Image 1 (cartoon, one colour):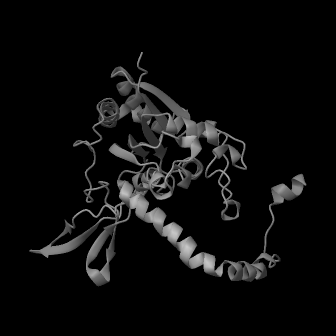
Image 2: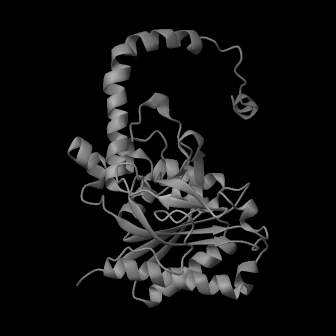
Image 3: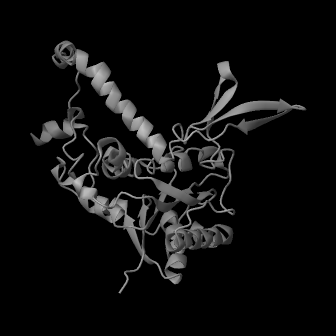
Amino acid sequence: MKSMKKLVAFSAGSKNGNTETFIKQALMAAEEMGVNVELIRLRDMVLEPCLLCAGICAAQNDPKKCIHKDDGVFLIEKFLDSDGVIFGAPVYSLTPPSIFFVFRDRVLGPKMDVASKEVFGREPDFARGRFRERPGALISVGGARTAHWASLGLCNLYTAIFSAQVKIVDMMNVTRVAHAGAATVRDDYMERARSLGRNLANAILTGDFSYCKEAPQGLCPSCHLNDVKWILDEQIVECLVCGIRGKIIVQNGIVSVEWLPDDEEQNKLTVKGKITHLKEIVDEMKNYYEPVKEEALARLEKFKNYNRCIVKSPTKEAKS
C-alpha cells in the first residue's frame, strides 16, 4: 500500500495564536485533499541556539554529534521525511521571532545543502536519498495596519528555504491581526489560508511546484517579493532574496525594472546557484585561507588572550 504524502508545518507562533490558526486552516484544507498533515510548535521543542563551535561543526555530517542533545535531530528528521512544508511566524520588530532563526540555523543550515551532492560527490549519510526539491509555503502574520511594520517577515522566512531547495508555491503576508482570536474574524485571510493549503497539497500530490497565481506576485519574478537593492554605479537593481538582477528603466516619468535573463548561477533559488556558492566557499578555504592558516592562527592568539573586556553572565556566575 502506497503511503500518504505528508505535509509538515513548523510554527514559530504561540500556542493557539493567530499564526497557528492560519496554519491549521491551511492544514485542514490539505487534509481534505488526502494529504497527511502535522504541526510542530517550535516553542514546544527543546532547541538550543547554534554555538558555532569554533567554525568546526561536528553535526555537519551527522546531526547526532551536535554538542546540543535536544530536539534538533528530531526536527531534521521531520523535515527530511516531509513531502512539503509550511513555515509560519508572527512579526516581531519587522522580522520573525528568535526561535525561528534558531530553527533555521540548527535544522536548515549548511548541513542541508543540496549542492553538496554535486560538489563533493555524495550526500551526508544522515540525509541519504532524502535531499530533494519539495514544495513549501510561507505565512507571515503582522499586527500593524499595513506591511510597513511587517516588511521583513516574508523575506526572513525565505532565508530558511535556500540550502534544502524548498520551492515556494504560495505565501501570505498578513496585517492587522494582533490580538487573541483576531485571525478567526478575518474571513479574507482565512479563505486565503485555505487556498494556500489547497495549493500546497496540489503541489505535493501532482509534482507541479509552479508559483500560484493568487499568491502575492511582488516586483521580483523569481521569489515574488519586493526586497531589492539599487546598485548606483550600474543603474541595476538586485533582489536581496534570490539575487537576480534587472535594469532600471525610466519612461515618461515612470520607473520600472527590466529583469535580465535569469542567470541560474546567480539565482539563490536554483541548485546551480547553490553549487556556485558552495564552490566559492571551498575555493576560499583551499586557495586563500589554507596558505595563510598558520599565520592566521598565530595572530589569533593575541585576541584570544585579550579577555579583560569580557562581561560574564550573572546567571552562570550565580549557578557556579
